[in-house]
View 1 (cartoon, rainbow, N blue to C red):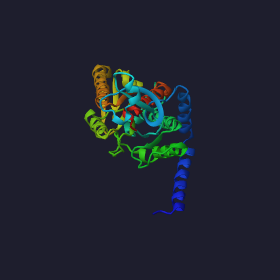
View 2 (cartoon, rainbow, N blue to C red):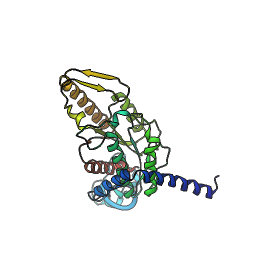
View 3 (spheres, rainbow, N blue to C red):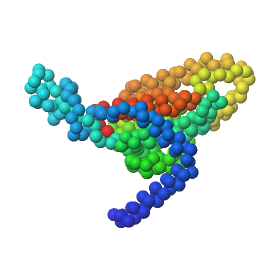
View 4 (cartoon, rainbow, N blue to C red):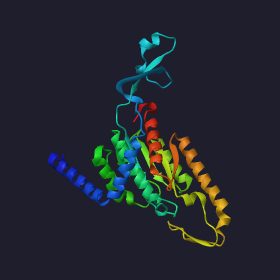
Length: 303
């Protein structure tokens, strides 16, 4: 056993380190909290089916419902069997991760941020929004237990600087508790079979996830012409093209196949997929993502 005083001292040291990091990154944290504050105005009621004690609604019995949920008094009034849905009152745990590989650092002149900068902004803003709603968050790969309140947000900032600074383009293989939630921010340009393996691993444990593909506007339009030298950002080497416009069609088709493949992969495992451009404001993407998490949260009454 660990003495209580020692535990308290360790917690205080962790929080102090997190606050030190936060002080060194005020623009990012301030921007993330500003985005979250803007988006929270667009978030309406959060009532949804799940665990709790507050009655929400009657609905017809469906295969898979627990017999204990049947309301016999309501059922006796008709020729159908009804169950009682209760409003969700328990916080859920959400793990967040952003791609730190070389391709994420690229930025065209049309973009507001690099893909990595936008991923970090969305990640911290989503964490702030979830924490405002009473959820628990943690950085995937950090080894931290999901927590709530501002200390959890500060620990998330610390993870961006430390564990999440790794350059892998896919998150680490980590066994999460069943029925948790996972949000991944990346350009998802890795081979689809590798991404599918990751999704399959988590989905097999009942994890519901969200793939947010972050792309630069130039990646989506390929606005290049003439003789250009393309340099790989992840050790691929360089490629000199005399007429870069000649490969535009093939490139755009390949990118579209990747995007459609990601969407189909998410659909197959009951995850969600969305694409965000770095020349667009982050608020719309954050609101959409938060609403998706809220909708999936009540599925099956699990967290």
